[in-house]
Structure formats: structure tokens, C-alpha cells
Amino acid sequence: MRVREFGSAQRETILLLHGGGLSWWNYRKEAELLASDYHVVLPILDGHAGSDRPFTAIEDNAAELIAYIDEQYQGHVLLIGGLSLGAQILLEMLSQRGDLCRFALVESACVIPSKLTNALIGPAFGSSYGLIRNWRFAKLQFRSLHMDDCFFEEYYRDTCQIAKADMIAFLRANTAYSLKPSIADTTARMHVLVGGRESGTMRKSAALLRQSIPGCTEQILPGLYHGEFSINYPDRYAAFLRTMIDGK
Image (tube, rainbow, N blue to C red):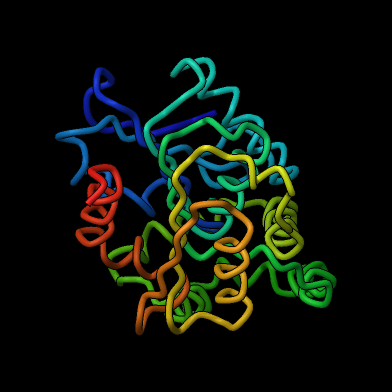
């Protein structure tokens, strides 16, 4: 498990799990904003640029992160947040061990599988994978993600480093993930965020999470696309985390 750390290790720990195809820099600005008061850890998910192992399954990556928390933090941290694939891994972590954290912030997590999309991933990426190294194609893809331009160089560099097998594996996992019944037993105080401009499936996923997890709250972010809150609005995201922790 490779991670980037911000702030003093003597403070309470926050883990933030980046989105699929991105890396730790997804949360770099938030980590810098929170480092004065918390120890912020940004793990690199399996199969992504800078990771130390290939991607096999959401369940496997979740188990690895649990083992890391056990080894480094005696089995418990203050808060875990996650975006998209990272949010699915967070949900799986709490399904496997419900008391890992006091607070959980789930952003743009799909928990309604799509068999059609899942089936198309292999053929689609089998024929187009080489294009990810094409600068112009990468720029068009980047713009479709509605990310701030400041992230493009890191996005392009790291996307080019993701192996074809890893990209197909985590995209398939992302489109096949469904909630485990055990998530209802988590003791974490969970809040779910979804962009107002996200797909109907994403909004339905957010509602399903709220209905399935006792005490879970949900918020729709008007005007925002998939993952835009943490990626493009780090000041607001960091303030939101502080509000969750402070109970305001």
C-alpha cells in the first residue's frame, strides 16, 4: 500500500480514496487545507499510477486498506471519504468491518450494477486503449470529466501509466458493484453526496444508500457533475468535512 501523508501523525487521521483513473492528487488541495488540524492520508488505489499492485477487485482493495488501518492506526480512523471507485471501496470496507471510522463521506458512488455497460468495457477498451496516450484525445476525455484545467498534466501523465488490464478491471468492477447487506451494520455516521447533473442511476444509488444504511444522510449538489465537488471545490469540500466532524 502506497500513500501520501499530510499533517502530523500525532493528530486524528482522515483517509481519502481517489476516483478511478485518477490518483492521490484528486484530494491534494483538501489535504493541504486540512493538514493543520488532521493527519490526512491519501492512498493510491490498486492498479493506478504509483500503486504497488494490480487491481483485482473492489473487495480485495478494501481488505488491503483494512489491513493498513489495522497495522498503522489500531483498526480505527476518524473519517474516511471516497469518490466514485474510491467511494465504492469505502462502502465495501464498511461492509467488511463496520467500525473502521467514526465518519464516512461517500461522493458519487454507483451501487446499481449495469450489465450492458460492464459487457461493453472489454471490447471498447480493447480497441481504443492506445488512444489514451494521444494528447488531443486525452484532452477531449479530460474536458468530458469537468475537471479544473490545473489537473490535466497529472491526469495525462498518470492515465498513460495505467496498464490496459488494470483499467479494464477497475472499470468493470465499478460498473458491477452492488451493496452488501452487511453495510447496514456500520457504526459510521455516513453522508452521501451526488451531483445534481449526474445520471439518474447515480441519483438512484444515492437514494438507495440513504434507505439502506440507518442514520445515513444524503445531499444533492445543484449544478455539479460526477465528482466535481471534491475535484473542483476543495475549499468547500474541506469545510464540509470539518462540519461533519464538528457535528454542526
